[in-house]
Length: 68
Image (cartoon, rainbow, N blue to C red):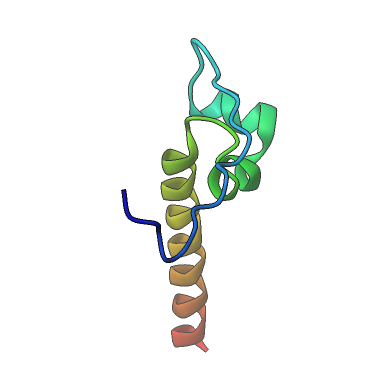
C-alpha cells in the first residue's frame, strides 16, 4: 500500500453514550465539546444545533439592524 502524503492523526477520544439522546449528550459533555470535539456519537447533531442557534442569532441581529 502506498504511503500517505499527509499522515492521518489519531482519532479523538470517543465516549459512546448508550441509550442516550442529544440532550443527554449536551448535559454530560456540553454543546461545544459534543459538536466541536466529537466527544460522543452526537457530534453531527450537535453541529446542526449550533448552526440553527447561530443562524437564529444572526437573523435577529440583522432584523434589529434593519429596524434602526
